[in-house]
Length: 455
Image (cartoon, rainbow, N blue to C red; front, side, top):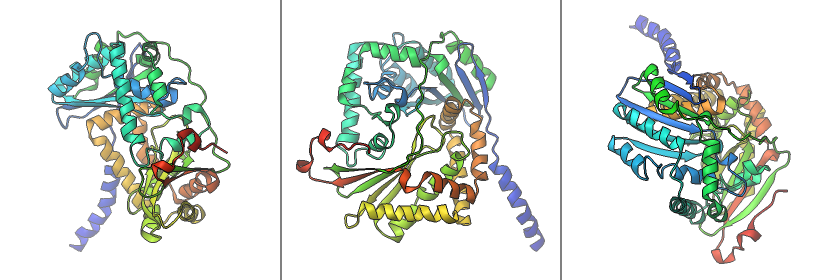
């Protein structure tokens, strides 16, 4: 029995290493009109996931039209001359599937899951709305009102109002493309015209500005043939040049206090600019973010919520792999009324300084990396999630194969790497902080008077 146990002890690490190296099936082809098609064959179930990612998001929406990229995402579900309003949703649900869409800083994605028998129909529908939409004033007005209602529910009439991702960007960044409110102002949304909508579709929703990704029970040969059949005849379009949106790390701290009539307890958001995508610091920063804020075992949760008992909750907000311009690693903390933002920030600085000085504990680093690898692979098991992840990576990195390399990058991160990025990127002078304080509505000044400015 001891001999068997010894052999098993030798074999288990080898088996674990083999299991960790999942060669995700990825094949990529570009059509003559510029549409990039990514296919990941998976025969485990007779279903397919589809993602169409357009390389346009909040960062590229027109000046004076804040919220327009998000508004346009809604308009894409409002029908075309051949498939009127409601058809897209009815066909998807009628096939036993579902669909959704979302708008991010650098891209807008549209996803569907259907039985494999519904694949051709969904590709026809996606190609149809890539060609054109049913541009009419009634639909535009309706969706302007829908987006405005979202803002009322999620921002204006909600405690904290998204300040940890909307307002913190406005404080932390200088260029309009990076700092403006992607949800949009009512004035800008109402000012959008049919000509704006037509121009946006023409400029950014062509095949050469898109990635079609299909994952599931379809062979690459068939998927490429279907992509050619339904999308190949759509002419490529001229995409407006992308401006320089880069911004260096902050050299002086920025801080703002905001009142909140709906919050019961104070909260703060601290944001630091992330390393550039593709840099040697990106993977270590992703690991550091998980180490600091990844669940109840994280450094900041244990230090601020459990240890010092000054915070009620700590959460990290970042998208460590899916960005193509300046982005933040943000810590959002709800803290106790009997303490202060200064005390919370000092505690946060102390925990980060420990890592910057001595590096992370070896066991904690291994735990975090194991969790990140498990989360990454789990996120690729579902066909929709896999299709969408591959489409995003192909769009932003120009290479869906990055999905295979991210686990390698995570595994290769050392304690010294984490120590280095903690010292470089999360220093106190490189952050922007918003302190959100509960305050009766009657005591809050008009928004223009209450807004802060950058130093």
